Length: 124
Image 1 (tube, rainbow, N blue to C red):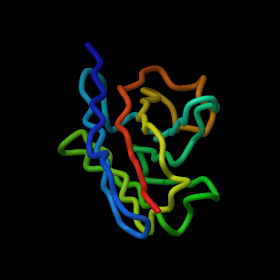
Image 2 (image 1 turned 90 degrees about the vertical axis):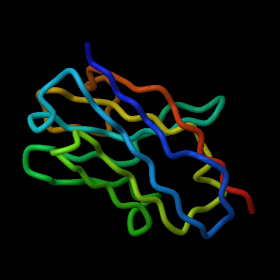
Image 3 (image 1 turned 90 degrees about the horizontal axis):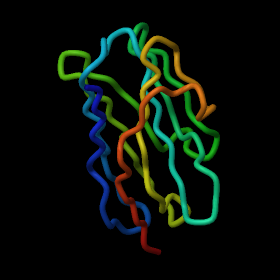
């Protein structure tokens, strides 16, 4: 059974930091890609960042470039999203998703599995 467990959300002041984790199981982790998406009520889910666990290449949305860092620990089957210099507009439910045999994308439809959301709230 495939499982993706996202955690690490919380309440933080603007300028602060949080680290999200996505623990994966049930598929070959080092052949996959993991993406982070976020969603606020009434808006579409948007891609934030993704990483290929095969070669470590990573990609970021322009809105988070230079502030967020995605990384992968293949020994722990876990992907992290380090979020620094947080802004109120980063407030959202954050989701991780697995592209089990691909290289990832900012396109939601290519992902095979999704975890539950973890809420990030940034106060001004």
